[in-house]
Image (cartoon, rainbow, N blue to C red; front, side, top):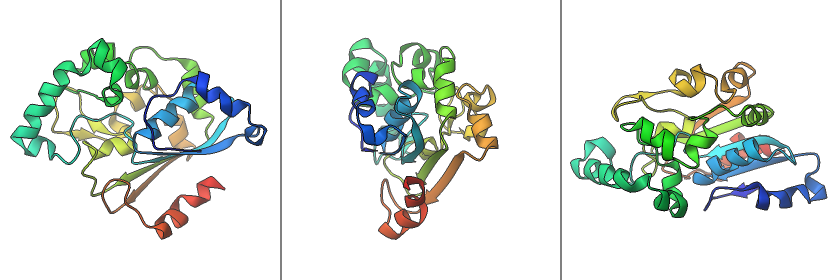
Length: 224
């Protein structure tokens, strides 16, 4: 399956997959941009039929705290807009009706994010650890994450490799392995990493820009 992503998944509509006899033995899934974290939610929430490989192409697994093509903290205007946007991002109405708000992650207001983020805080186990989510994600054969080194759409771009800003500020970044989601092993990523199930790929180019040759060489093997 390929998902570009427009809204977070629910097992009600994902159940159509379980009706397809061709998918009984499992399937590989590839998500583009926000579709990547939505597919990860499918892997965690809806294990029937089983997802085998999950390929995230430019996904934002720790969310975003910036605007597309806005240079973040290097621009005072971008910083101001970002903080103004954040003031309403976690209201109930915005969370329920604006898809992008569901993966808006404010490192300056961590408690607010954990309490009111309906989607990202849930699948990242920020409030409670759902052992079923963890078990389902760990059942993947491979979780492939592609980062675009010249990405001007995703801020911070490290979110494409499950990294993010260190809590309490928006300047210094941390890798997945340095983050609490990893050190507390809320999603089973430590064990997956040790078992070689996490694959980190990088390519030059802006958001979702890659050649057919690069795709065939690097991603196609995980779809076979």
